[in-house]
Length: 442
Ligand code: ARG
Image 1: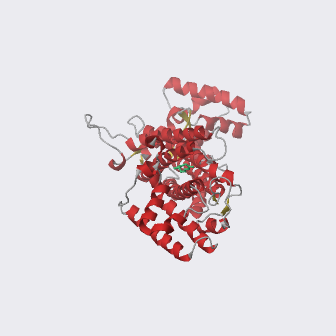
Image 2: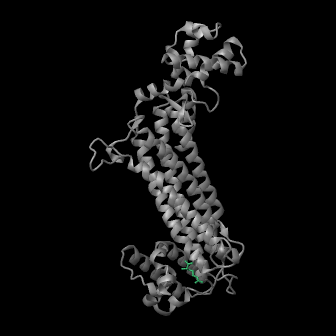
Image 3: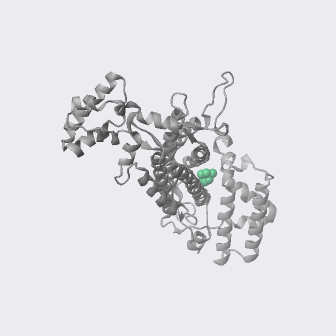
């Protein structure tokens, strides 16, 4: 029974939140005349001493005492005697654990906010430095159209900005206090739930005691936001893995974020990126685990809900690591501009530019222009040439109206520079977005 029932092995992580909740509760009880001022003072200094003990690693955690709440309470009684037994008036472990876990989750969301801002700043710095760096843009991982490296970095910045916004939304919704809901039905003591809510930084007390002790959707929502963020991280991680390969050589990572092989001396493996790519498994697994724990649970508290903590701890620890590692890699990555430029021209990546030229200069319908361009590409392929390597006469054999003006759109740089539509890849558009983000991030 003890082995399956005890949670102290993992919920000791909630110690600081548990003590903060108890201090707010004791202060409120005294203010309401439910506890004497002398008992309150003894409780508050006792709890401070216990927190110091825990932080110093000197607290004697006991599995027999089941969880963090009973461990702290028992220790308080040891230290201050009878007054310690009065702390649990008008509350229950059910509202206590719901409060502790909310506080802990809120603290984590604030940390992610900070880490995401840092990652966004790293991406922004790369975008600014490489607003003009031309690289291939892909669809289906096949050369599609040239883009700028800065534009590619800003695409991720946008994703992480939405992740941050999701975390902020989640924080707003979850910031209500369960404390004072007691076991499930409220309490006959004249408690002041507004006072404890305010003391703990919550916006208000939760309005329904049954909901307060049994809601875990705040944790699910945080895990969902974490999972989506992890998918974004894994996509960027995957690109880093591809880009650092000998076949691509788009970017280089320093030794700081790569490892050598024990038998192949030439290797520089992007282990950090691979691990970021993999962490998404644990994070989404945690979301699934807690979803399944919560589905079908009758109101109000059931011990099933003790299983809420470990998935969240594990997911958040993984996300924190992944965010820190990714910010480090983004700062570390050195784009190989020559190689990117060379690759940007491969795969007839400016074919769309020929079609657009035919539309703009010869007033052809786009569908016809697309067809003509297809024949020009086939010719270049047959001759083993790039599009800007074809002779004017070759192109005129396909479409007599083509003039040498067409060469001005055939380089990857010209192609990217021409894409000036809002949100497009043109260096000036990238710089515009860099400016917008710079003013928002600092
Ligand atoms: N350790 C428990 C948990 O994490 C605390 C709440 C226990 N409540 C109860 N009625 N047994 O959920």
